[in-house]
Length: 136
Image 1: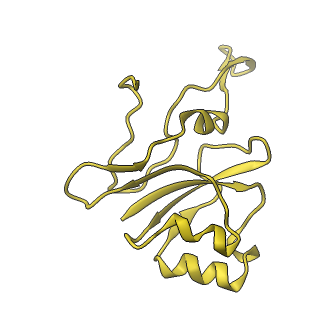
Image 2: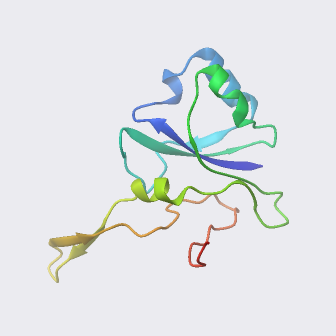
C-alpha cells in the first residue's frame, strides 16, 4: 500500500471530478480524507491524505488533469518499516497546520503560537510519522 498526501485546490471534492478522474482514483483502490483532518486551507489549497494500492503511479495524474503536488509519498508492506518514495515537504505541511491556541484559566483565548510540525492524521494500523528526530 502507498500513502500519499497531496495538495489540491480548495473546494475540490470527489464528486466534482470528471468520470475519468473518478475512475482513475477508484482503479487504485484509493480511500482518502479530504480535507486531511487537523489541517486548514493555505494559499488556496487543502491537503488530502489517501491510501492506495501499490499500482498508484503519480506520474499519470497530470495527464488526467490532476496535476496535484505531492506533499509526501511512502509505501508500506505491513511488515517492515515505511519506505519513503517522496520525502515529506515539511514546509508545506506546516503551512496547513493551525496555530496553537493559548487559553487562560477560564478557557478564553488569550493568544496563539505558530504551529509546530506534527502529523495531524494517521491511518489505523499504519506506522506513525515521527518528527521528534531531527532531519538534515
